[in-house]
Length: 535
Image (cartoon, rainbow, N blue to C red; front, side, top):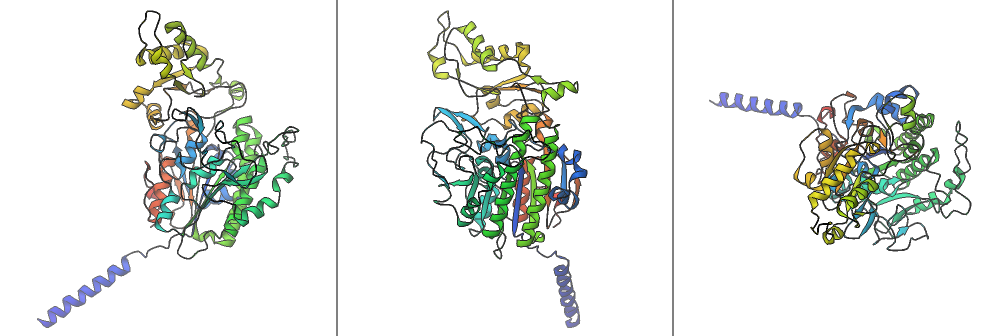
């Protein structure tokens, strides 16, 4: 009996030991997450210019995970929305960030996604007058973002973790880094400095002030863009914003990369034992250039190649300070862009400039049908219209009847769909989107982008390739050219390779949260990209 018992004990110990050996060792958490979002960077830029990449993009494509079919699932496809999704995983229907700007009925004005009159700018003496029209130059904060981000969740687990966001644009720095960041920094075209907000700090950290003291912006203004000498980065004489043109060329990205290097070094990101820090970097200049010339222009190719080189430079600096073996890098874009209608015509492709105004078409139709009234609130934009319901409630038609909501919607939609110059494909009203619309990916994108308190009353979808304006190009649509973007991961715990299954940028935040063992951001709708996780 004792022999039998001894055998059982021996076998049990052996199985336990085997189990301990078979159990995978717990991987150390990365010291730093570097989350890079390129403003206006279509996925096909990775493939079209692949042979000319020898820097950071080359590293990520060669040694990282490349999700070849990442598509945004909402409209509009614009900067604030894409940046808010990047590290929150939340659709506008949940996050409340429905566009770059929207009409706020409570404030009775158009507001931007990050403007905040309760704060002041830090790093400049030029303070906009409080209470004026909300613009991109105003004090800012993440308060209009109604959900948490990856950085917020990292800080919840460890308050010693540092989170820093950097961009040319305030929304590009603020929305990815979140509510609890140590600082978000963006470029002020009045002073040429990187600035922040009293939401984060009362004065710039010494390292940021030291970078500003180098006056790099003033030097870049006089530089010539090799190959494109016609581009002028000098603002008009006497301008109150002497650096306003600087972002529309290579030098904006050069400033961002330099400031990011300074942050890693001086803020000692990734250098605190047992702590994971987060750096978010938004390269904004690609967007300014792309709007002006379109995705097929040589300037866009040159900007992509330069961005690749800047990423290589940044990775080298991080490797020196932290060691890239301790760093997870994720890269995406906030949206793509449509072909320039001028180029589309040359290529015999569908598309063109829209030769009429949706506001004028709706207003004229409602006046003809119901009489004169203040039907629309100005400022909704071309794809989202806001009705002045206070004025409509007081209005009576020619026969003395009160005009109903349904009648307004029907008359407006009929006017938009019947005018061939508008090239309107679909119209969705507030009631439809609130109740839920059955249909294809466009219908789903409209619902994903609808937040009742902030969205307009009518949402308009134009035919593919058709854009408001008279020159250049833009982005906002549910079509693939605006929705298809890179999603690349590189670093420890990531299996390199090409992954061709359709995914969304919303998947980035929950994937990183899972890898870090932190709570998934509160509004996330994405899935974990478990196919690329090696542990």
